[in-house]
Image (cartoon, rainbow, N blue to C red; front, top):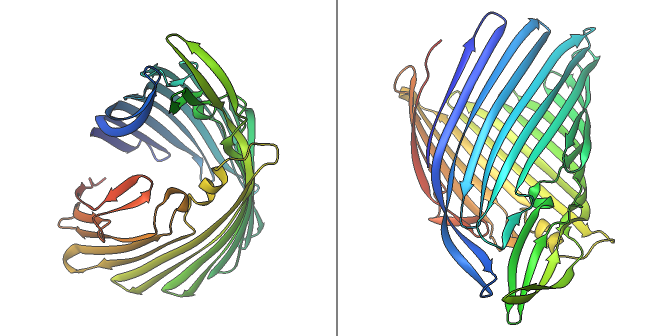
Length: 433
């Protein structure tokens, strides 16, 4: 992969700033993929290459209307191209967003805005058993949002409420409201709570995919994920709460917990069986669409202490626990999706990190990471270490070298990918204003 890019931040005036940035890339990615063939009936592992290229350009202008009001306009264009042994796609994305912030009657800080995205794509079918229909489709998204942060008690208690409204080509209008409460009884502690609704709107994978695999070559029997365009948005209703306390001038701790309720999660729909006569081959086709067949909940908590032990050493740690409790909806076909969800996320995740500021401009940052097992993917729990050594050898220059996943030559983080031990170097130059 080769990549080049730039970013320029300019202050046009006392009230105006402008950002321009862009990237270009081109490369190829080796992949092994299983592809079904009709004639003769077969399922083969193919070692192939996926060619990728693209670029993007973004512009952002921010203008301060007053000390308590500003607006921002952003636009970008992105083009992606990929062609592999299974599929090809060219996609162009045009996006525009506008945001306005102002203070109303001293207690209300209001942010509102709108956006539009037009993203046409062209699919290039390379094998008969993988396709998206139609081949050409433009995904149009229109959105607007408004949020009000209201100071109920000055410098003590705030309520933030708002909603996002979005229109997509698959399900029409969706709304995502949220409300958050923040209370600081003293300067050393903070309580917060929130309730939010979120959605995952359908994509072309949920609506337009036709992916066929071989069940048996004799008699010829194929299974197809053949979407029926009846997929609706997955929904989440989330309840969160947290507490942060500065225990000593050098030590603070964050504690948070959540309860999430999910509905209409992805599973498989009703199975249909048909006979297909496509000379010279006649075969049986088992068709299965994606469907919204799972509901349930998730509970979890996290603790994150941070201790600045000395002027030159800081110690950080995090630990989180998550439990998923899902079930098939009574109106849908029972599938293995519930176990794949519940066994596809680790129950326990933790990190421990030390940050050392050493003499002569050196920095040394070791990090230990642990993640629990993924039973649905056959991935064992693992622990590993990352280490970074940095050196500020001049006023504007920094040289660093980092090693990742150092405790073992390789380990699985999700099936079937094995993450290898790696080392990389970086040099950074910061230009002064």
